[in-house]
Image (cartoon, rainbow, N blue to C red; front, side):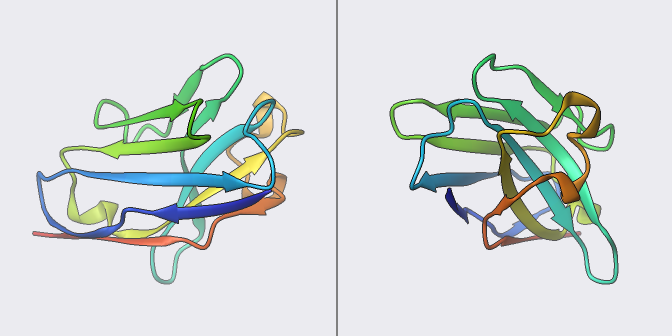
Length: 125
């Protein structure tokens, strides 16, 4: 699976952005699609995950109520809708996919074999 993340940019605090994750080489069927983010000098942190088959989602506490994750089956794309953005949301955002990660390990970057290239999100205060 090859992943392509896009949609990042510069936005003011309180604004919104939608990130996209496109798959090629395979469909997302049977995969968990997860967004991580990494700020300069920090570790790569879990943001949100989507079980493609069931549609179940889970979010980091820091983004609950502000971010949503969705999918388009026909386009084989996943989306991270980010609202009420804060300066602390500034990071490079990555989408990742795995068909093998178990629920208890979904927040661990080490569990994912497939990664997009990352897209920069900058939130100004």
